Image 1 (cartoon, rainbow, N blue to C red):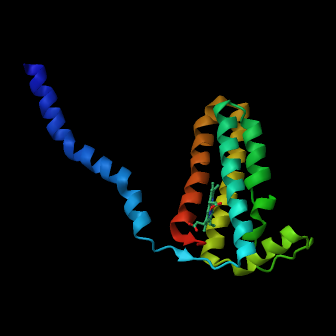
Image 2: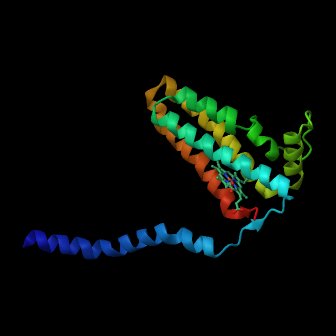
Image 3: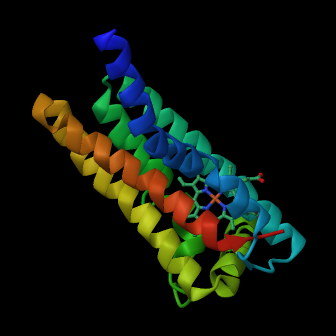
Length: 174
Ligand code: HEC
């Protein structure tokens, strides 16, 4: 009886916390319905290019998580630097507007237009994400040598994903 009473008390006392927790989990729906994101008005070919770049970001992130899950930290670091980092081709569209375009291939032409048309606040968020990828790579290489650094590498991985979310909350292309 005492135990039952204790369970009842716990349930009643914890209920508001549980309700609050459930609200925070359902919140994204209201965020989606109340769409105050800024529209970035790229021409169709630039938009298609930017969205393909995004799908590449998601693939890179999944591959990084896969490598981390398998404790292949050096591999995860290379993917982050080469496919998401500030010097990767995935970051060309987020480079400063005045960056010289050395190669004027079709892809570079589209990246060039992205650079020119991207709102400055979005560029900052983009660069934050690409830099977070480089910072993760440093932590992942530490983790490769020293098991103690795994938590820091995991935190840095989360930070990449948080930067994706930050931009998605503020901007849209369609
Ligand atoms: C600087 C801003 C920015 C950053 C950083 C960013 N995105 Fe995006 N992403 C966008 C915008 C804007 C869209 C279009 C969303 C819309 O129109 O609803 C988009 C769309 C996408 C899409 C949909 C692609 C499609 O074909 O429709 C995916 C997937 C995606 N992003 C993944 C990511 C991932 C993963 C990251 C982080 C590694 C990331 N993005 C970082 C701005 C960003």
